[in-house]
Image (cartoon, rainbow, N blue to C red; front, side):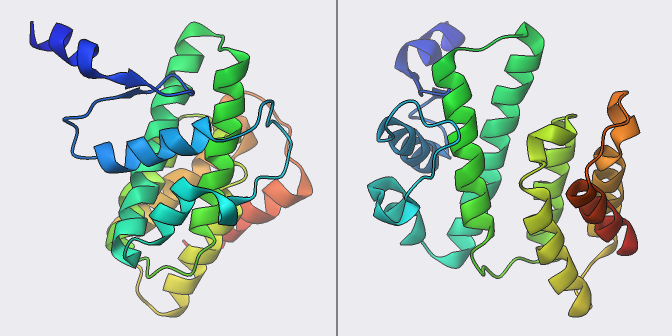
Length: 197
């Protein structure tokens, strides 16, 4: 009964993610869905003007700590979608477009100079690793590396974050998915993470 009631109140985003009004993360999921709804289609490969998007403006109006929390919620939403895609083996053109857009939004938010800490970054990196697909976070990894390097320079990396970085570096290894393809940019990023360990 409870599950049935939940499915009736939840609204599906353009990415296929079910947004439940009773969720503690509803505020952010609603903004992510509004962001997707406001994009012209198709969006794949096109430049997105984040600065003019009303939903993105609302995210940026939040406190730095809230923005960091929103990034974690966004990455977990993307991971949920990625797992669904890998389980089914297919997704609609709209869902593919949305996956691309949410990935670009994540990188945009990560590139902001927010006060990330070892404690806030550890679950974020763990979420990326849980996707079990290095191509999923290929665009995000260089920005994550810069954030980790900054914390390392400040001697603010705690043991839990080192463990998460170790798993991320292993996930970036091309052999982790049974293929041996790795371009120079991907290799530099992987080696950058390994250098932190």
